Image (cartoon, rainbow, N blue to C red; front, side):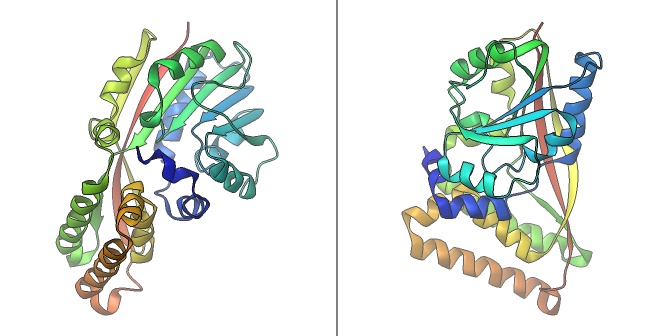
Length: 272
């Protein structure tokens, strides 16, 4: 499995800098769900499992007294600590299958773009153990595709990016990608809580430059797998992709600001 890539310090820094932004719309949906299920009680503790470099951990800080991010990768945790800007957020190494918290101590367990790497049965057992009564579980991710919108260039940009995804998917982890393509349907079915729901196709638009798009490509684990297997071909693929975008946009290559449309999905559950 490609999960070992996340242990590399260089990739941890790339992931922090270039990964697709966490969805603000999904965050609003999760917080609304938690507040509804907890009947407005004060929210003390949030746990972000598989937190990586902390990109989905810090947005929780204003809504909870304490937030803990855990990840198996020391490189990711070190980067998360380096970029931590919240006094009520902390990070530590721990696995999803052995959470370092007491029984019934957590109001929200958040998992962003990571559950597909877990041993799900063991993780769910741990999640149920540490959740308080009426505590909530939010497991969410992003559909592995993009839709560009920019003047009269949209069609050509999307055609180029479609070929990029086709190439990168030749280097993906098939089981992992299936989870993402079916928008966590399998994970929803595996959640051993009766009170659960799944929301798909959550739209969000982010303004990005071509430099940002190249960052997304570089931060994708599929590209990093390609780079590990064949660095010469991977770097040539990266160079040619940038060159193709340049041919499409011409003089606007460096100044163009694209509307990039993403689709997110979320599985929510509550412990009774």
